[in-house]
Amino acid sequence: MVSSYPLPDGFSDFDVFSLGSCLLVEGLLGFFLNAVTVAAFLKIRELRTPSNFLVLSLALADMGISTNATIAAFSSFLRYWPYGSDGCQTHGFQGFVTALASIHFIAAIAWDRYHQYCTRTKLQWSSAITLAIFIWLFTAFWSAMPLIGWGEYDYEPLRTCCTLDYSKGDSNYTSYLIPMAIFNMAIQTFVVMSSYQSIGQKFKKTGNPRFNTSTPLKTFLFCWGPYGVLAFYAAVENANLVSPKIRMLAPILAKTSPTFNVFVYALGNENYRGGIWQFLTGEKTEVPQIENKFK
Image 1 (cartoon, one colour):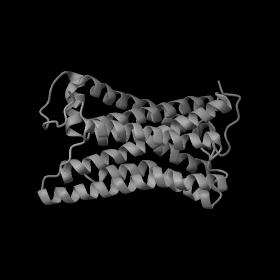
Image 2 (cartoon, one colour):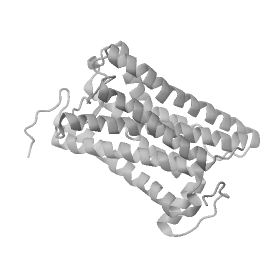
Image 3 (cartoon, rainbow, N blue to C red):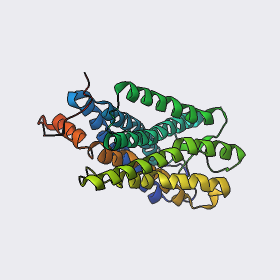
Image 4 (tube, rainbow, N blue to C red):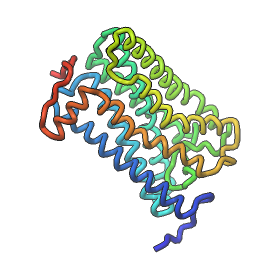
């Protein structure tokens, strides 16, 4: 039965169904893969190291993004947002805080890997836990600002999910966007880029590459770059002149991040991959000696 709710401007029935299907696949797949990552950490004692705790924290943030995507998918199939204005604000806050936290934890893992491979410095539990708490509090602060008037949460072009409203592009939006982006995107991008460049140079010297050092930055920019470009474009031009379908590509790509992150940071980690295999099959695999074992 066809819904009586009108289609969002610029979208056909097929568009809404297709985007909703993409969100549903992203949400369910990302949630499942990250749930396995979390469960493996909790179940396999050998995985409980400070470095892997950062991977766990990333997985928890990504489960939040996946939950946000699943809610948006459900609304897309309804062709309207059924949770009202307060629900939109909650959805926007939840999606924003988990997205920012995910970006921060990606940078934290890059920083930790730099010290592992380049300075041979071990991450301590106290540092890992303190860093995780700081990231959640810091991102909660920036995500709460639109709730009290600095920035604003509103509907995406599909009008079945909510995020930071870039459609107005006014001084309130710009004054929030610039410092938020510097402290939650630009610095993290620099950390990821510089860390893996240094690791790559180290691998070249030793002739023993442990992983592809270009992959983390490429996947990071693929997932979050379009959203960043759109956000800054809206600060200087009228974003509403851009096709709604093109504008929806940014959140669709961003919500692929939880799935990519599992392959890059959990399955792409030889130690963590072995732990996940042991969790799923009960079979231990030969993995490198784990440092900083949880006692």
